[in-house]
Amino acid sequence: MISTIKKGGIFSVAIALFLIAGCCWPLFYKWFVLGELSISFLIKTILSIFLLVVQSFWLSQLLTRLGLIEQRTLWPVVVAMMVGFFTPEQFLAWEVILSNFFWLILFERTLFAFDDTQENLPLFIDIGFWFGMACLFYPKTIYLSPLIIVITGLITSVNLNKFLLAIQTFLIVVVGVLGVLWVFFPNIFNSEIHSLGFSTDFTAVLLPEYFYSYCVIAVALLLLFPVVSGIIRYVQTQSRNFVNSMVLLLIFGFTITLFSGVDTSKSAMFLSLPIICLISLGMFHMKNRLLANLFTIALVFALFMVKWAYILKMF
Image (cartoon, rainbow, N blue to C red; front, side):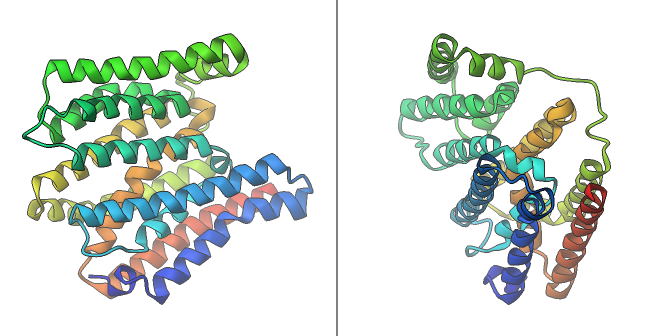
């Protein structure tokens, strides 16, 4: 195990602070170089960093409750800041990060509120409600509707009537809010509908500042996959289903990001939740402490070099 990371020691704290400082470079660039730091940009960036950190601490608590890690760890915060290293544009997508909060609530409710001896009707109302809230803040989440059925089926015992209850609640939330927007805020309504579109133009995905970052994270996930797959063999079914759900969320989310066109960086923030979860699990359970720390340094260095090339291009 990685005792330094598990216990939140000096190594993980130093890495987390370094990454937080790196994530703040768009603020300094806008302020000192371009001289065009707006209040809106400042608020959105700070809000995004705050939401990422809180989300990672919440995820750490959830992993502890599921028995996937023995104690809370700072590693999710480190990975969250790595995700924040992607591009400065992603920090403007605070609503996507907030959508991930609703997914966390949905998972927590589904995992811990289910009772085999009860009808669990309020639980399915909650599922419909929180999925609806996630769709309102990040409209492309609507394309994950089949995934909700799969995830819920993995974690709980369901029937058609319960699914219909969840769908009914979802429609009440989404149609109700969209109806208000259509009447009183037509511009916001049109923006929500327009954001549902897909694009086969992969130019944005192949831009170096995006593509190389995605490659670094993809390599990290592939290297840690044997560790994660080994973990779920020895945990309870509930915990195993949660990890499997995160893998499905990553696959579906990547597909959405791939076809998002110019909104690639914004859609990529949706992947932060499964990425933080899976990399954190893999790093936490690596048995060789030295190897784990070297892997962390290599990953941070790779992301830093990608971002440094991006900064130089701006100048």
